[in-house]
Image (tube, rainbow, N blue to C red):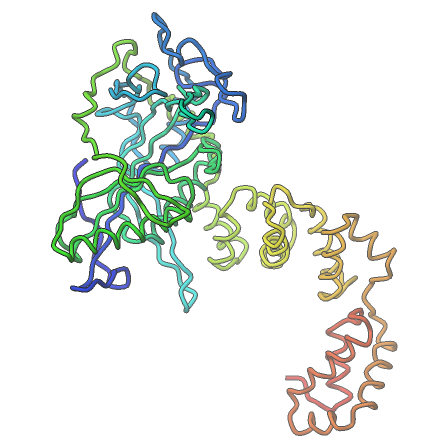
Length: 501
């Protein structure tokens, strides 16, 4: 990979050191487990959480004479992902053997792709913000390549006092290694990149993105340099499985390297691990280069070839991706960029919102989904998939507001009831007497009583008409929030002699 600097140095991303400013340069290699029922070269199951060594075929265990057979669905998933990254799809690619020894790698090599990957250059656009002015900054991060490879097994060191065990359930599971260009310049950009990439593969259905299960993890390459200078020596932080940890690892590693350089030292190219409990990286081994792996084409696998019709067929059935959906929400529903960004961040959230917004006011639906529903779920640590309020229930609450059956305040109370107890919103309103009071006679009586009981406030309003809101609030309080707010406001102004603007 030829390193090309495409970013203009930005002072707001510099890190101040004892001897001047420094700039971080970051590239990421993300391993995304392909969503498929079976492994890349065998028919063994990929189901997570099965007993150790139960998802293992003779191919996965590298038994003599066993030959790999490519899984067509894994190929399709890689192509779909490449299309989602707006990348070049290579109609011909080659599987290579990457040679290294490790106890959980039965063959003594990994089947991967080196010089000729299935997907070439692409791009991801990330958004940082909003800033204090509510603006977002869009940044294009280049994708160098996406290649298919098989995962290794897992070594278990806590099962015995003196021995380690090996679980081969993951051995042979299909991975997409998505390699970025060194275009990332801060920990915030790196987190945004990982978040966006995770969102894209989940929209596509090519990876579930469950980082806590190991189905998506990142190797983060970090170096520092003087702003705009030559690229520095990189260190690779291996297998980071949390977006938050990615940010922490980069911050620590950048400052570690700056400290060494400012003390007159040099950076050794090496592989490091991030320790979340200590918030620091530590050396694992000297970083290998490509020639150390002695890559050569796997003699058991022919070159992978397909035609343009194969790619076209997959492209025609791609779902709407987050950037396109966000643009549509802004254009067709009049949402702000911020609201649209929140709603498309997860496919499940976007699907929920669209179900609520169907045939209704988009902005109103967005406010209820973002502020009320997501706010309530965040407090209880639940995901949108676990919501106790269905799109139909939330839509019914919005319909009751629009029909002026309930006020906005009553709607908040109704939402809490549905959230905690369930039920049909319209039936709850009827059964609990929550309907809005629209009888102007009853509202006028309440307004008269509040005005008569507060002569001092009346005098203040005469001097400062904007204080009329106090009376509106008192009337709403006295009616249990059931009075029609517009009717209350109009009557208060009429009674106090305040002219409508």
